[in-house]
Image (cartoon, rainbow, N blue to C red; front, side, top):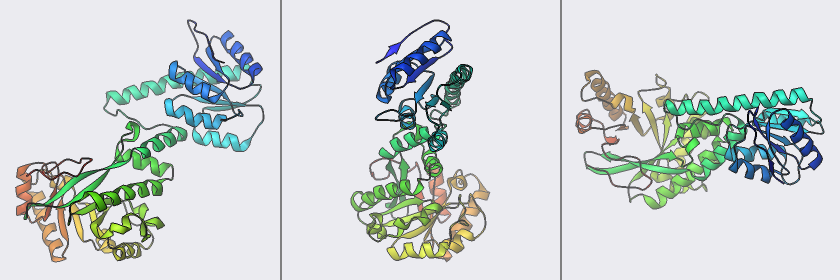
Length: 391
């Protein structure tokens, strides 16, 4: 079933996948004569096994095979090799199959029998580009981006699926300095799957794949468990919503898991994203309030200026962004802005949380400036378990 040949000066290492022995042997013989190192297998499972044990520069696969076709194989390849080029070859032209393959990121699509020069040219180009992709990943690691995102849709789909399996929440305390008690915990998105373990990357992947609602529902399921079982009595849970989540009908379902504990939940909508694209946002917010949710504006002091977020949301709480809070004990301009914001919010009976508090000096300054609640490394880092703050 498997057949490998090593030779010096190879133009590239090709994995041929075709269930027809005659076609497989013909292609293997041709490419070896052209200077390629060839491994030939008769099935998609055989291809995945080969990829796990030997280096390959490009996969040349038949489209129509029993058990798993070439498009499905492309998805499986992305489980083990995010950058490996896949060229599909078919005996019958199918526009739908070709379009599906191109959308997923297939490197090429050829008809049988392929012209020799075109086939060799495609394989050589794929080999070079695979080498460039590996170097790009190495370059990104050198500059500190250790987990670059997959480049094609098939790779991103696989990465997102694996990341979704490990999605969980980390909890950071929000404290009341006046009572030296925990007011709430913020639930922060996390994933253990490294290519998408940064929240912004996971959210970007969900948006690109049009799976934002799916991710949002998974996060809210986790948050419901936390609010119902993990938090101490009387302690609230803050959780982020993207403006796009407001269009998800499941968010307003009284039977949804998070709706069952809505009285303990504060939903945060960030000032970093415009609310203009949300139709009838006041109605969305009112529906959330009827379920029992409270509303917070996150990242106040960054993102979009103006009054639109206050006008649309009528928040119960605002969170001052860490960029405004950082060094407030040493910067008189920051201190004046924080003090003025806190005073105006109190006039409107809006609670004020200062985010990103890292030092005791910032802590004391913010208390003096009138902020109600504090959040940051000074009191606790985000952790998978709910832990009391450090004072």
